[in-house]
Structures are given as structure tokens and as C-alpha cells.
Length: 286
Image (cartoon, rainbow, N blue to C red; front, side, top):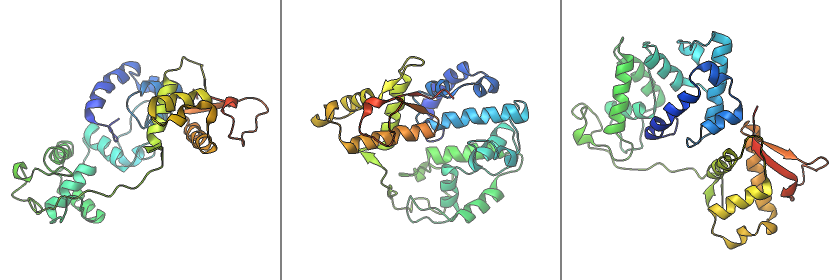
């Protein structure tokens, strides 16, 4: 839940989620639609499906007991190097190095004079520091403390060097020029990123009753009446080919990810994207 999501939102959502899925077994048994509805307000909905798939793998392969080995954790769906090391260190108190974005930033600035706030040491250097520096037997406490320093003092944009407990030993303290990373352009429509439109589509699908479907014509109307101010886009009878192709691409992407499923009338040529009336959509049960 904490991947790319604010802690305050997770604090509110986690108790509700655990109330609905009190065990790995109940989580593993949830269908796609149920898990997506339970994930409301969290964003990045594919994370919910990976979490469910991970629970299913733990139940089927390990009898419901989460493995403690980093190497074994890495074989589970949705778990990468950071999550595997964090689970091993925080849940099982194993001696492993943990590297997240905050820890990388702290280690880089602490041991090398970083010219700007976006500068980082080379990955190999950071990894070597990470493996060497933490006190054995205290991996959990150590890494949580470094994360806190990164979140409270050694922040990405405006580090509070004068208040940082590491200021007397930090190679970069008070010497960095503030800078910002150049954001890569992302696919958008009408000035709004496609990931936002995808989230809006999923929210509309969450609002449907079980087994109900929404036509793509109605979906288009709801999206553009609620989220645009361009008068021509309110005219659902005047949908352009580019609008049709764009929306079909979004919902087909959701279908590939197991979030939604598209229904079409028998005899419809799916290659023809012009007529929305032939298609409807709902959350995929799976």
C-alpha cells in the first residue's frame, strides 16, 4: 500500500482492508472485482491484484506462512528487491541491507559531497555502503531510523541540514544547490495524464452494482461531463475517431491487466472502433 502512496492515506485504509481480509486465506480467495473495490482511494489498482496474487502464492506454496528468506520472497508476485529486504528486516529481524529512495538519498549525501539536491552517488557505491554500514542485529531499527532522517530532515527538495542529527558528519550538509528532476512526459488526453483517466474509469466501475455493466457510450459521457470544460466534448453523438480509439485503448489496457472486462454484441467487428454502442464494461471478477 505504501508504494507511491502517502502514509496518511494508508493509515486510514489499512484497518478497513484488514477488516475485510483478516487473513492471507481470505485475501487469496478474493476475486478481481472484490479486491479492486476494496482498494478504492488508493490508486495504482494493479497493486491490489499483485497483492492478492502474492497471498495466493503464499497460501498455495507455503501453507499460508510468509517466507523469511529474501531469495524466496523475490519469487512471489509483486515483490521486488526493496520489498523483499524490507519484509526480511522489519518482519523477521534479519540482517539484510534495505534500500529505498530515502535511504539512497541519505547515504549519497552523507558520504559524498553532492552538488545538487537531485544528485545521487553511483548505485554500486550506495549498495556497498548499505551492506557495510548497518549494525548487525539491529537492521530493523537502523533502517527505520535512516528512513525517518530522510523523511524529516534529508528531504528531496529542501533538506533541513541545520536541524539534522547527522549535520556534523555529512559531506553535503548546507552545500547543495536546490534542483528538481526533469519529469518525463507521460501519455495524456485533453491535458490530463492517461493514468488519471484510468483511475476515473475504475472509480466509475466501482460504483456499479454487482454484475452490472456500463456502455462505453455512457462511460464516455460520464468521464467528459465530469472532467472537461470543452463544450464539444459534451456532445456524445459527435465522438471523434481519435476519442474512440483513445478510450478503447484505455479500457483494453484495463482488460489486459485483469481490472476490467469488455463485452461486445455477437457479430460485432472488434476491429471497428467507431461505434461505442456495441461495447460495455464492468470490473473483471476473475
